[in-house]
Image (cartoon, rainbow, N blue to C red; front, top):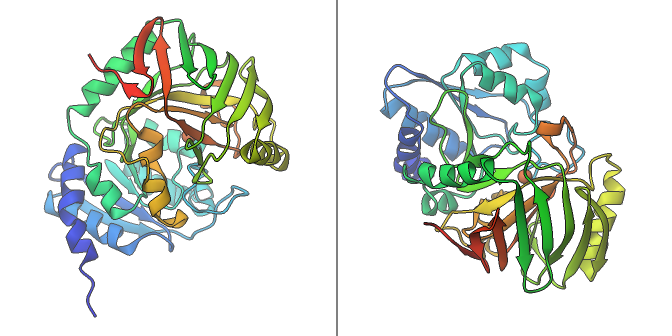
Amino acid sequence: MFDFSSVDLLDAFTRELRLCKVTEGEHVVVLSEPASRGDYVAAAFGAAKALGAHVIAATVPGGSPAPLPSTHTGAGPGLRSVLADTTAQDLLKSADLVVDLTQEGFIHAPVQQEILRAGTRILFVCDAPDVLVRNLPDEGDKQRVLRGVELLKSSRTMRVTSAVGTDLTVQLAGSRPEFQTGFADDPGRWDHWPSTMVLCWPELSDGRIVLAEGDILLPFKEYVQSPVTLHIAGGRIEKAEGGAEARLLETFFADADDEWGRHLSHMGWGLMRSADWFATAMYGKGDLMGMDARAFAGNFLWSTGPHPVLGRESYAHLDIAMRGCTVSVDGTEVVTGGELVER
Ligand SMILES: [Fe+2]
């Protein structure tokens, strides 16, 4: 019996940490919980060491404050053990880079903002090994996503249409455009390996979103089987009509019983050309966060629930990835019929 999996991943983690600009003498903390992948902890530890950094592997108790199973949902609620422990928080704040290998990460936990404000960079990793390797970012990806961010910043409206009937108009004022590029290189930056996407946090959008067969519902990691029409008014889902998934979504909103559950939060488009739409079908749900779906080049990704720009704290977070949409920003098409447009 032998275990080579961490050694097998060492090269990918070393390349990834190099993209995160880990340099000799920096302090890297590899954060895990008991359910984290041990091979990732070892590979991240080895990669940091190979680059000459000081490295500490810190394992904290599991347990999430979210009323959801911790199955890589993307809700990012953090771990209770860190949220309640200032010593753990101080360790993370004192690091130059935290490699976050926890099951859910901290993206929607306010404490993460505090850690980032200390200048710490955070890289979140929780997809399957070959998903990480296939989607290893390229340094040039940052310029690609920044072009999208600039376009959103200088524009007033985003319009999303599709052949099956989507027609959504989104007000961009105050929507704080941002990006994910798969590596955390600047002080205070959080990022997610793998990811290449442009997104924003609008308040107001109106019209309808029509989910087509084969679109992907996250965190359920399920493909839509029959079309769903979502009626949107003032950034809120008024009604979901259609087949089985319409009923599923309505039940989710009702069960969540969350003030912000029906409100839209981030939305944008994917630029990750190496992404595989079928990865969602090929892995166990616990093996995957689903970044192939979320960052797929030419998708339209939108979500519900937590909205940091508007100060809405919520655990009822859906991410829905759609293909076949046309996304235009003040008349400039960035996605045409599901195909990414890059100039
Ligand atoms: Fe999300």
